[in-house]
Length: 71
Image 1 (tube, rainbow, N blue to C red):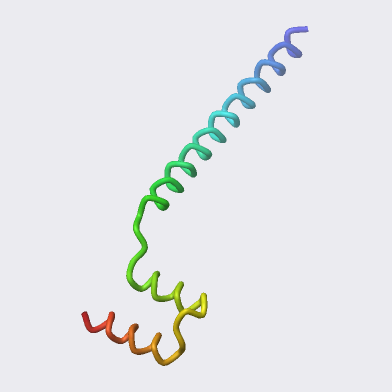
Image 2: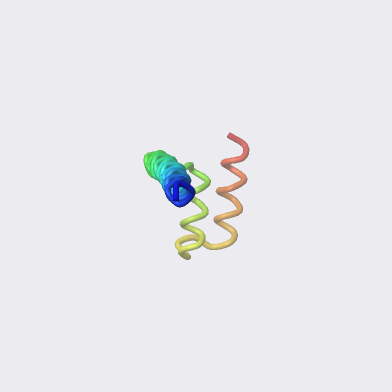
């Protein structure tokens, strides 16, 4: 009779821990995601994006990348 009550209580405690850990993981994910969005892209990131979008050709990309590496 008491065994069922204890198993039910143990299940609820275990479930509570799982929910708590899940909430912490979600909170950490959103905090990290927010911090990453607040960072400004580097010059290299901008250059890579311009190249990927077709705004600059291979030669200009290589020249600008070399220029960034020198500074």
